[in-house]
Image (cartoon, rainbow, N blue to C red):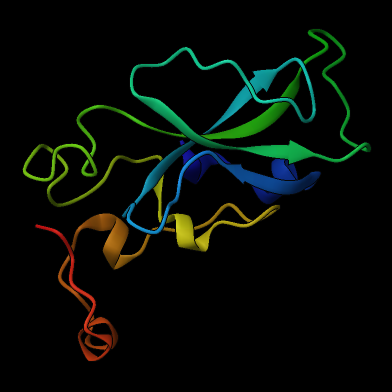
Length: 133
């Protein structure tokens, strides 16, 4: 879960690669996966789709026992809000969900009103931004 990711676990990130435009996504799920390389596009073995992944710099060390690197992967499931606006996450969001606008290399991101599907803030109303409900 994203709430369990700590800054020291992602301190060797150099970039985030997005496989699709995140402008219309209220949230993405993030996890730390054990991957065989620092930079290559990871294989994806979940339901749904991979939306992006992190690249690691040369100082990132592989695990002594497995030889793998812990890297963030961003993904969505078929029942997430972007695919099923009236579904289980019409309001609220999964525990590992983060607003993609708050993500950057070495920053774990955070939840926002938008990612949680909550009512728009006064700032959002002033900007004319509405949430899909």
